Length: 232
Image (tube, rainbow, N blue to C red; front, side, top):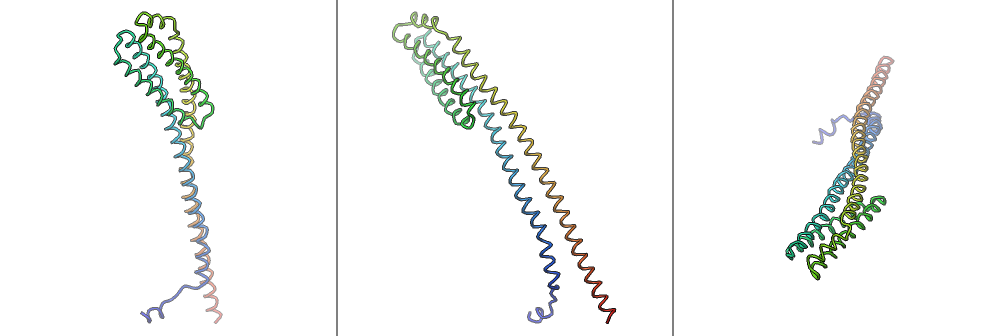
């Protein structure tokens, strides 16, 4: 082994130094490529998360509106039949509406405009649910005829129209946000692809330049050796 190390021929120091210096551009390209790829990947992930959140908002808005409709149906069934089992459905619809409203507050926390729309929707829903609760109480205490009269004197159509309008406004705004976010997603994906192509091109160009530089230095060295031999 000692004999092997003694006979081992090491490359010239200048050549090692040149190779080390030449590797710096390549390493720079690799580091820059890694950073840009990660950066654009993270932007794409964030944009996709926003798209998913927009779809969830639309689903929850639909669920909230349906829960109010279900509460209205349970109220009518109870008033007509007087069967307390329909009150369980009414309470279930109220809980579902409450859960949907709380979920929307979480999903829309980053949008002041949508928070305002949700506040208007919650106000309209609260008014409707309060009216349903009052007619149920009238049916309990005064009977069917009094509850029927209370419904006639109420503004069921106007309340539901207000809820539908506010839900539509909130959903339309979210769809507009969704379209912009989908466009952002496509743009981020395109940027990521372009960055990948650019880094690949820089990598190839850097390799070629390094190879040409090393070849040039080697040729000059060989020429110098040849000239020294001729002079001797």
